Every structure is written in C-alpha cells, then in structure tokens.
Length: 244
Image (cartoon, rainbow, N blue to C red; front, side, top):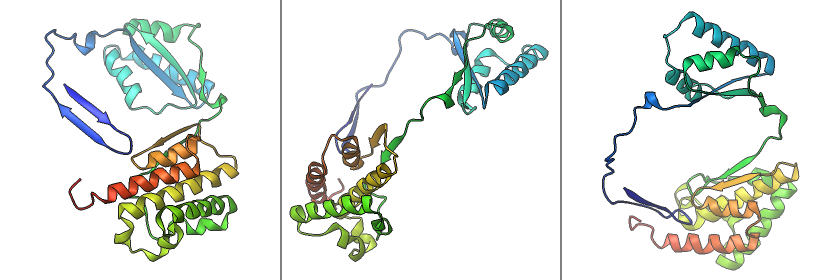
C-alpha cells in the first residue's frame, strides 16, 4: 500500500506503508468475461474485408489462438486506424457468430469528427542558448515575448531576452534562468500557433511547464503567470546544491 502525492510545481512524494496482500484468491485471467475486441482499418470497406479475413482464419484454424490472446493482441499490438468496430464477446463461438452476422455494431469513423489538439508544456531541462530567437521575426511571438520581458525586468531586474544570448550552457541550467526562459519561449509558441488558428483543446504541463499550461488555458494572465514563475524559480534556486 502506498500514499502518492503529485503536488503543484513538481513536488513528488511516495510513501510505502505496507506490502499489498490479497486474502481472497482472484479468478484466473482466462476466466474473465466478457472481453472486448476492437478491429480497425483505414476505411469502412477495408474494415469489412479485414473482418472477413479474421473470420476465415478462425474458421480454418480452430483452437490455434485463444479468445484472451486474440483480444489482447488487438488491444496492445495494433494501431487504431480511422474506422473501427468493437465486439463484446464471451467465447470464440460468440465472436464467430458476431463476425458472420449481418447486424454488427456500428462502425466508429474517427475521421468524421474534429481532431482534438493537446499541447504538452515542458519543465526545466529543455532549454538551450539563443532558443526561439529566430521566431522574433514573427509579430505574434515577438509581441508576447517582449511583454513578458518587460514584466520580468520589473520583477527581477534583468532581461530574459538578453540572457538568452549572454548566458553559457552551464548558467542556463540554473533554475532562476531556465524556468523563466523556458516559460517565455513556450507562451510565445502558444501565441504564434494561435495566430494561424492552431489552439489547444487540452493542455498539460510537466513540473514548471504547469505555468505555461495555465497561461495557455486562460486560467492565468501573462502578468500573473510571470509572477508565479518568478517566485517559483527564485525559491527553488535557493535549494540548488543541497541535493533537493
């Protein structure tokens, strides 16, 4: 048994309390029913052909593969393509009957819906000298980065844009520099992509990347996010060299 805590801003802790022990014997995996089999192909026509081939194989080679292995293979070793159909089955005979039936479940056409966009924001560690400076040629990127630079100067007394070219690789890995610079580049990319119509439906951030994700989601303004980045990076810098 373990207590697991993923705190705000990358504070992770796991406490092992005791080893898990099940007093009741669990049923073997082979007896778990029903099972789910999902078959997919690039189009409805190709899906029908694929299902026919699966049926023919199972008919010609009875007993060669178990229902559990078949469902497990399709669940873990096959990429889900545009058109798919799922079967809820209790036995191989049940599956064969459904494959041969004219009244199968409906086809799910993944290509018919609007694609969702997820943006994942990195924490400290992905930075490099002069990163993103070439993007300053684009107004949406330049505008938000310049605004962040002004906000940061008031908080810290130094310019992130200047530090991008004046710091060494080793200095760039210091928390007080790495976190604001990484944040600045990522919010610049958010605005640049947004200017051409690419906007996130879902955002997620790892560690310090949570703050760029919060800005992208609209939960924090640029000024609010800059202030949190400032406190986070400065406080974390005080622990540098202490093994924390």
